Length: 305
Image 1 (cartoon, rainbow, N blue to C red):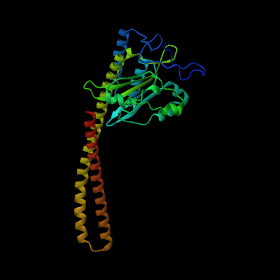
Image 2 (tube, rainbow, N blue to C red):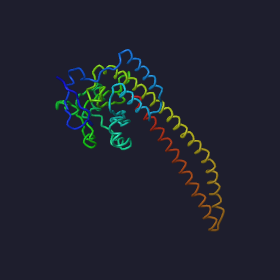
Image 3 (cartoon, helix red, strand yellow):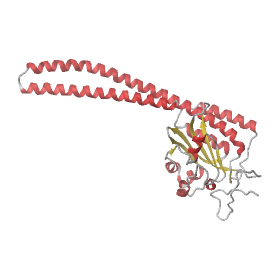
Image 4 (spheres, rainbow, N blue to C red):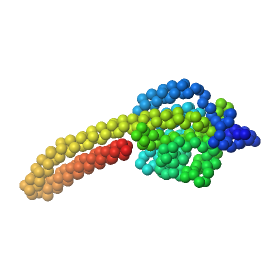
């Protein structure tokens, strides 16, 4: 008969029984607390809420909060794909936040992940599959992925059940992964994530992917407009400054030829040197603006893949 996973902070002496995630039992999974039609209504409302958010800084935390609420997860992290890496975007953990404070907790999770099968999130991003584990410490050795217990060892937290889900766009592109930790039942005991949630949580992830992409595209549009404005301003300044500089330089060079005293020549040379410095500064500003525009175009190309 299957037992119940103990909460990582329960009193010492209480039994800690590992569950078999392949079979369900009464009290074994985090059950669906509402009927499916109600959950679908909630899902629609979540989708509307997420797609209206355009702030790419706060959006990952909102996505993670909704995913945790939907599955009664105690903790979670969210990564956004950036080339061949998964960039850390949000972390939430009720236990560690209470124990360490939000700032210290976030510091522990700042590292990005390489996009490889060795990590749980990396495997999900590459395979496009949902990964559900009843106990992160009991992954068979023949699996391509592995759980990294470093944070648990450092903090004393105990990761047990895991649900890792890809953020997949309709065209199939994976733009991120959220990883939910330790589903809780009504008695706040850690249990495996119910497989019945997977269809709904994948739908939630798809809505989240659309929301993230929309926010990214809006950010790109704002950045493009700003960079183009700066480039245009730099070009205009270069033209407006270089024209009078040319006049100043040409006339100063003529004066140098006409004067014979050493002091006047030194003053003319100083004017020519200052004009040259201004011309170089303007050219440097214009070049920087052009490089920023090129970087922006490369970023747009990368995000459009």
